[in-house]
Image (cartoon, rainbow, N blue to C red):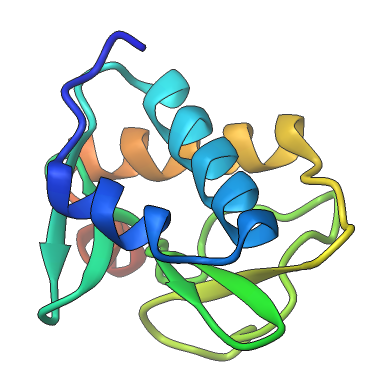
Length: 131
């Protein structure tokens, strides 16, 4: 681990069923692998967010799945078809993982890296205007 974990994110993850903990920890590692400067925080009282010059992603555990919200304004390519919801959402799209599903790490990592690059270039809102 080369990042500083936020104890509030730890508490959120630790309170989940084991299978959701596993998913959240793997996503957490991937987003930090995408860029070591990503920081963790809690927004909306309890929801873990990962940020670097803007939101990168957020975690939300539901009863039968874990949602990873990708804050990309719908502009990051999804050639592997990992987006499961929010295709028409103007702010974030979702990748949902259910118990027993493996995370397809390479495309998720690539999306995190592109979102971070977009954030560094001024954010998806600015980039959409320029398209």
